Image 1 (cartoon, rainbow, N blue to C red):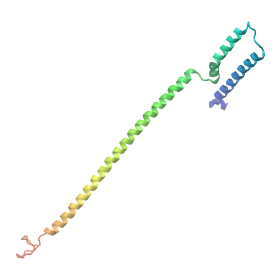
Image 2 (image 1 turned 90 degrees about the vertical axis):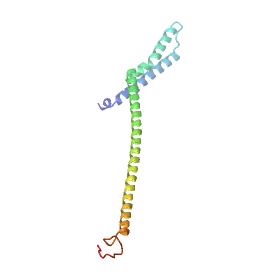
Image 3 (image 1 turned 120 degrees about the horizontal axis):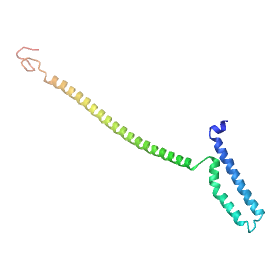
Image 4 (image 1 turned 180 degrees about the vertical axis):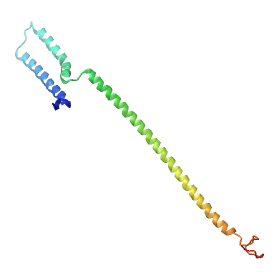
Length: 151
């Protein structure tokens, strides 16, 4: 049967069992209202009603299929999952910090690299212009050659 495999049977059993206990207690109350209890039997009836009242939570939990150990197990499982969520949030925050630091370092590295390229280009430009201005046409070292030993 498919109902009992997926947990719905347990819930249905719990609902119908709780409904049965509720109707049973209503029946006892109606019977006590319609038929008065004799003074001699009053103590016995009160003890029975107290016993039924005290056993209602145990009865409902046994009908629904839940137990105290199951509840404690579920609570411990919930606490473990909450701790795991906290740890995951902490590690997520740490990873975000690491990524931000890495991005900062990469940006600084790129800026340094761009600065180096610009400096190299400026130095190359200066070297070209400086060499053109200082380039001598003659082997004697003069721009206007009088020794006639041109390059």
